[in-house]
Amino acid sequence: MRVGMLAVFTGLTLTCGTHGNVRLSDVAPDTLFLDVEESMRARWDDITVGGVAGRGAFGTVYRGKWRGQAVAVKALQPIPGSKQGGKHMAVAVKALQPIPGSKQGGKHMQAAASRWERDPASGACRAYCALRQELGVLRALRHAGVVPLRAVCAAPLALLTPLAPMGALDGVLLQYRSVGSRVGARAGRRLVLQVARAIEYLHASRTVYRDLKSENVLVWAMPTPQEAAAAELSPNPVNVHIKLGDYGISRIAPPSGTKGFGGTEGFMAPEIMRYNGEEEYNEKVDCFSFGMLLYEVLTLRQPFEGHEAVKEAVLDGARPALNARVSVMFVDVDLQ
Image (cartoon, rainbow, N blue to C red; front, side, top):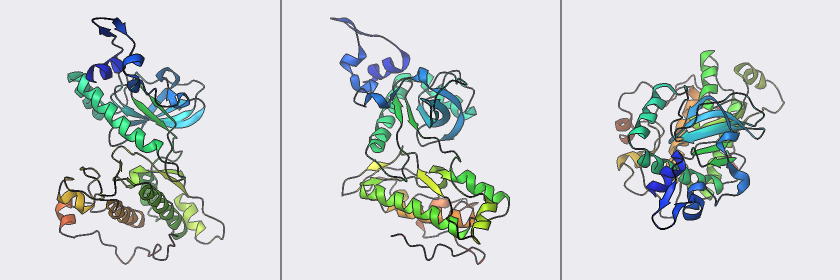
């Protein structure tokens, strides 16, 4: 497997002592994702990569263009230097490996590139397994609140998904915080209801998300602080549209549950931290993360912000407190 992965990512030729040079598509078609329908297999030369849009659990996400539709590109291995222009679709590119020639990403990407240079075969195998894991989850999901898969690229390894026009929710909440405003009750209710319905769908599909936080809530529509304030006095519907993205650490779990250490401190459920992911847990870990996301939307602050020992606090039963100034706007939310 290591040799096959390295051949895909470096362009090396596979040589057999009996048959000479052999085609990778004949001996290891899965490394080229030939099991994925052709319409969802992208060639890197057809993708135009722009700046960094964010970072996921196992890769860096770039803005890009592909086939005339807006997408995000998650790259899991080094990718060629970014190109500008072209008549293609706007996408986000999630890179699961560093990108040669790219000046995006700063020290984070430099460190990733250095790890690949030291052991490219191991890096290629890890990136391939990570992409296969996320690809398997995304191909099984179909819901308005789940970001859909657009395409997969074999060399370099990358996943293409729609590019959220307003970015992630953490950036939107920062705008509210910077002007001293709060998410209005009407916009807030629609926001958390959409997140709840997406999580409900994932759990009905036996998928444990494991990384619910504002950075992974992608925003297609959300009022500005000024619009949200005006909406509180208007009878017109509030335009909010979000989707959950980044399934790098999600798992399709059997009824008995799943294992593994994964998540973000402050949002990670205590049952994962207590046993370092070595004991089984179920989808209820996402309920804890949902509560922490509610806190963030209400207060515009990270849970346990400024706390130096978050893990110990969570395991001791501590939870971030809401003060009297925070609205109780979600108390009567109907999740049916």
